[in-house]
Image 1: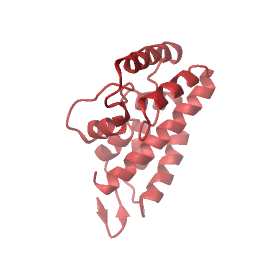
Image 2: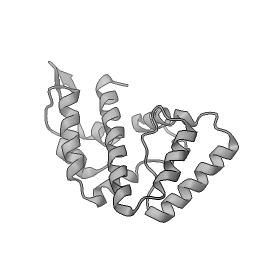
Image 3: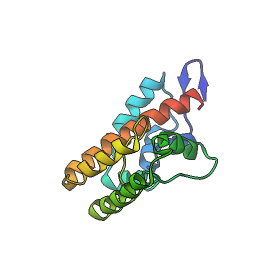
Image 4: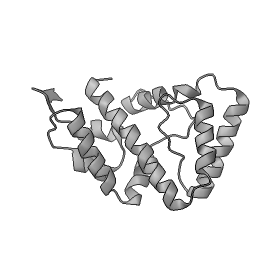
Length: 161
């Protein structure tokens, strides 16, 4: 994947970072000088996505509090990203389940948040706050959170973790 400081991620590796086929196509088959260069190209590609492309990416993300099973790189990343949910009290878990349900009914897709480094209580607070957003404001929030997640995953990809 990396040769002489040139990064050339392949399609399967990129899809673990973001499940939008259009995003993957925009980045695959090209060389990048480093992770910063790759992340800059990612940002441009994410900014160019239509909402349907974002929804395709969202479909690959579990609900906050759901533990993804399996041995894939993406599943492992998801479990690590949501480690702030480990040991969460039952009442807080129930509040997140209810919040996820309300969010999905209101916006029609999974609540997306960059969970890395955040506690369950922080994520619940953000979920409740974002439930008050109008559709366009929330779509902008989703795009920001997706970009954070993708940046983290691209860095992990290049670190080999």
